[in-house]
Image (tube, rainbow, N blue to C red; front, side):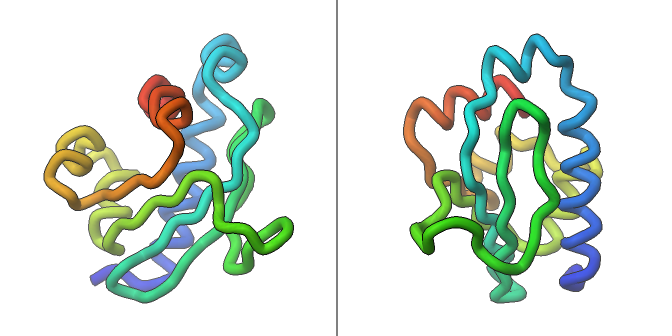
Length: 115
């Protein structure tokens, strides 16, 4: 099991990887949304925000008005680290239930283009 700090590092790396997505793709597929990432085996949730300028760093406290995040991910600590390191394929993780995403259908289609 990865630690909370290893998960934070993985989410920082994910933000850096998102910065590498070309501007045209971001402009086409990114809509400003709040994101939560629940680490199931650590009972910890991180909160962030995606927008045209990038993926903001994830923090421990929810932002905004207290409503649930618009995009909610649930994943184990080891799977998060493996996913960000490129050792776990997102599509396989989704279909096997290792990653769960709750979002609108439109957001799911947009995310698919970015992952």
